[in-house]
Image 1: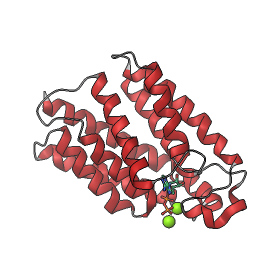
Image 2: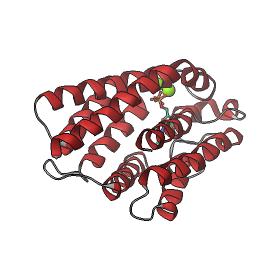
Image 3: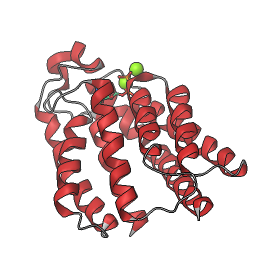
Image 4: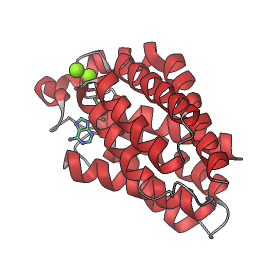
Length: 211
Ligand code: ADP
Ligand code: MG
Ligand code: MG
């Protein structure tokens, strides 16, 4: 049972790797205007390192908890950058919700997402309106909480990803005050936050994958 859950988590990380590769150029383009241009590369390197670590953990017979912790460490190390550290911490925190032996249901998936977002808020210290991925993650989490019935994780994640995308797009109208883009100030007005966009894309893909 635990091996099956670990394999499913590894599949999600492989999906993230392919989505980040697909989106690399566009995320880099946005970050070049609203930041320093390396967000596409950071997400591609980070997700690729995490997927590789997950495959290695599976081969070692690791359970979901151990697999996510190793994947999170690999994401931070492979990506470098602010978003890499935050995604790495999120994966490690999500891993804490899983067990290496037990199975996982809808509730586990939603709790893991909550724990991951908590970690991003704790480590990054950003508030809504600071023009970071938190601007997408907070409405994602709120919509997830209000839509989740206890068993409809895939549908609730898809709906929450829609709210995250709207919120990410809406960051185009704010000037950044945190993160790298703060030094660019007004230059980022008219361009959405790259980390908010990548967050919403990955959550949509997760929801579709689980459906
Ligand atoms: P770097 O800023 O080091 O170049 P990336 O370009 O990969 O790293 O990531 C930039 C993204 O990181 C931003 O678009 C923003 O969403 C996110 N980010 C930056 N600082 C914070 C923070 N304190 N809390 C949450 N997210 C943040
Ligand atoms: Mg950057
Ligand atoms: Mg950078």
